Amino acid sequence: MTSRRTPGPKDIKAAGRAAAETAQSIVSDAMRLPPASIQLASQLPDLIENMATATARLNEAIDRAERYLALADPMIRTMDHLLPQLERLVATSDEVFKTVSSLPGVSTIGRFAGGPSSSTRKRPRAKGTEPRSK
Image (cartoon, rainbow, N blue to C red):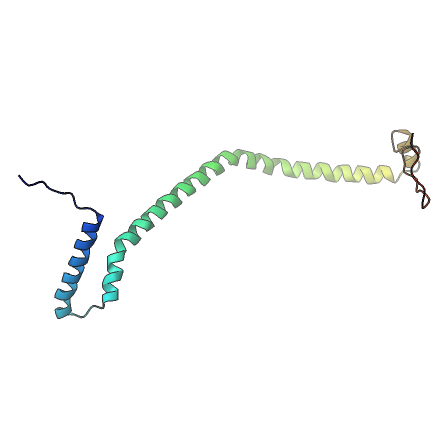
């Protein structure tokens, strides 16, 4: 009994080259094909496999992005609903601030209510003097 050997990648490549050469020699009588065309045709299976792999990876990335967007969709809708209200609130607070700050005596009230006191303000020092130590 003869043992059957499984062909390896080198054997398959050699058989493919031999088949390509045989096909080229047979076809060369019927029509002239340049060797570069046959070389390109022999690379097509690898190109198709690479393209299939890239397409599968792209589909996975698109699926992942769709899942993230589906999770973020309720939050985005909520923010779309809240933003106009927040903008109106900020506009109102700006109007109130302008109106109150234009009233006479507000700066005095601000100092009494917790504005910066005269003891915490920094006074300019004369040149060449060092700060006092406490």
